[in-house]
Image (cartoon, one colour):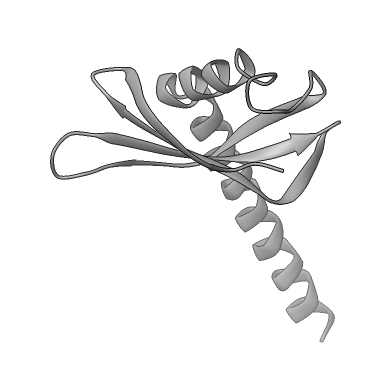
Length: 102
């Protein structure tokens, strides 16, 4: 019984470690960084303040070569429920922002 629990804990730790590595890679990608900087430069235009931040959740490239970066909104380090934006980019430039920022 203890061996089974220990194996589950080890497996959980390995999964968590892999997820943390994936999250770090996503946040470090040039598109994610550009999307975050783009939104941070416009927080006041978006009706937010300087205590808001953004973290990339996913990066997707469509069949036409457009990039779509989905980001989560954070307020004072806490994820905002329902606060997200999608930045639609082409050739490294933001073309449109679809947002539900709170």
